Image (tube, rainbow, N blue to C red; front, side):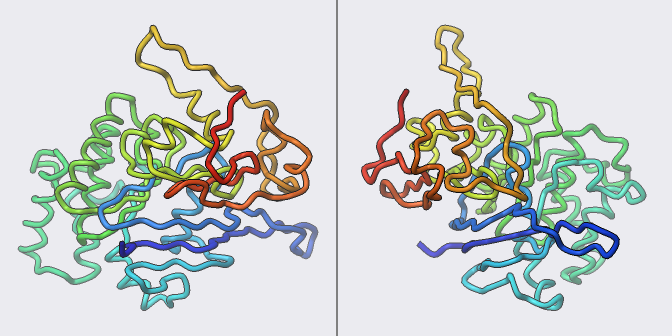
Amino acid sequence: MTQLLEVRDLKTYFPIRKGLLRRTAGQVKAVDGVSFTIAPGETLGLVGESGCGKSTVGRSILRLLPLTAGEVMLNGSRIDHLPPAGLRSMRRELQVIFQDPYSSLSPRLKVGAIIAEPLRNFGVASRDEIRGRVRDLITKVGLRPDAIDRYPHQFSGGQRQRIGIARALALNPKLIVCDEPVSALDVSVQAQVVNLLKDLQAELGLSYLFIAHDMAVVEHVSHRIAVMYLGKIVEIGERRQILAEPLHPYTQALLSAVPVPNPKLQRRRIVLKGDVPSPANPPAGCRFHTRCPYTFDRCRVEEPRLDEVRPGRSAACHLASASGTQLTT
């Protein structure tokens, strides 16, 4: 299958500067060798605790942050080294929905102007065509046509996020990076926005990189799931397989925290001990070994590779054997 997006060994480091001369004393390895693909019409859920680097992955792909190393391919063409002129054409294919639906919208512009801005910037339509396109987008995301003449502060959080979605759709992109698009919303509104994104995907054939820390949301929206810990992907695979049989102990811990809707069923909660290590000084060996209940000597000295342990399933764990054995206590 031809992949829409290919990310190969992506690294994004931030320098640590100290002293009067602000010399580099180290590096924060926010993203440290991440690889994955997204097919046309597919949603890849990228999940992990706060600070694991998942939002940095999205912003690096969008070139909102400078890459330290690695390759990013969109439709078979590298975009990680493009100059500003080349980035301009790339941005028509690759859009973003931000986490905060209020700060991502200019309070000085009316909704119609906000959605029309990318159309004007790229000169893809006349003035009359732009107004018609904006009205269509407003209706498509479930807002009333008169929203065009109102300001962002006149809308609720969920409505503002719908405005952000309409703006992302303006240029008919092929891939949208959803950077925790529902984490700032009430639970009932989260479901509405997630269902809207799924409906738009089915109608327009969109692909999503859906970044979230809530496994329950990722479970609902994704085709495949990638789990991140301390700058690295520790498990990736098809959604149903990961939910039914997680291979990495960190994935097991995340899933154990998801509430079960049936009160008669109980899920054994896995409580991880200790704090997440600093990405400026990650532990030797497996980065998860300081909190893992299955740690043994090899974990402390040898970093596990993200190897395919089953067809379409990869895990970075020494205990995940070649046959993909599920860990149990």
